[in-house]
Image (cartoon, rainbow, N blue to C red; front, side):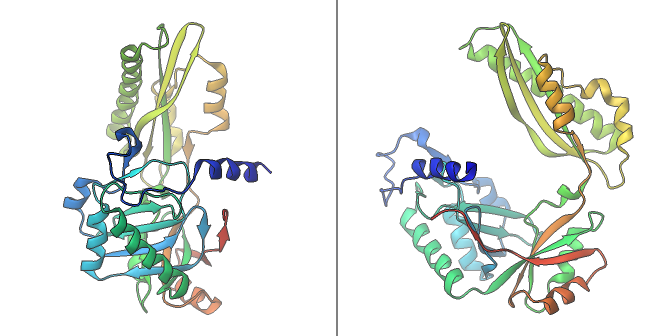
Amino acid sequence: MKLALGLLAVALLCQPVVAQNCDDRDVPDDAWFATSISADDLVQMVPRRMLIMRAFWESGPEALVIEDPAEVNDLFSLLAANQRIGHACGYHWGIVFEDSSRRIIQHLHNKKCEAYRNFHDEIQSRLQRYFHRVDTAPTHYLMNVELDPSADPMAIAGLLERDGRRAFLLVHPDSRLPQLRITKFAHGAISRGEDAAMEAIGQKAREKVNAVIELLKQQENARVFVEPRSNRSSWGRGEYETAVEATVVFPLGFDPSRLERYREQLAPESRDPDVMKTLNELEPPFERPASYTLTIASPKPYSKELADAIRAASPAIRGVTPVQRERLDD
């Protein structure tokens, strides 16, 4: 029931966009948001292929893999440094661009209410053709390959690219490493609406997080996995309190007992006992992932024989499963 009510609420927010050319004179500037492909990406990344697949509201094994350089780069260029109208509608499709280093950038698209500031009609036309091909003539079928976290996903991906198969690291390879969430609070006795003072308190929390990150980099060979970002803010007892959070990862085999020596530096320093309980008990800050999942796009649909052949490529492969079909909206 909760899910159904949630979907209804989203549906009410997600009326189809009427404008076809998205003339920016008709849309306030603060309604536009950058796409996931920046101007820097356009310079620094040369995608070698793209994967078109269902995402978020819809899922299914059918997909399209396109490896023609001109076709891939044309769409990449249209989306790069572009903007679209912000919405709370979720998404139906994912367009994944991958370069020769296996770095990916994923652009998500809602089929009902997506509007682009530049090249709107051309983008929509191209994407609709791709989506139709996924529905009617897919080139590949998606499967999830579960790996032991000690395995190198890049190496396994290379092993699996044979017989027309393509491997995509849709989950960052560092996600398999031991990781620690760092949360630091800062406080101040200020009144509501004092924006500059609120910003200064937030900056203080950010500096605390950065200090811990530098310490762990130097002492434990940690590296940043999720960059510092604002996490939560609250008012109470005449004080404003805000938090900044980041995640670092450690080398495989890291012993979490070593974190005891940083107990003081890692203390969140919130003055709210309920927040401290949540942080320390309900959300354990240290995690050792049990597995890593990469995605295979195969020209043949899933079968037990195919799964066995993929699994035989490496003892680090624990299992192979097809992407399941699901649809959450109409």
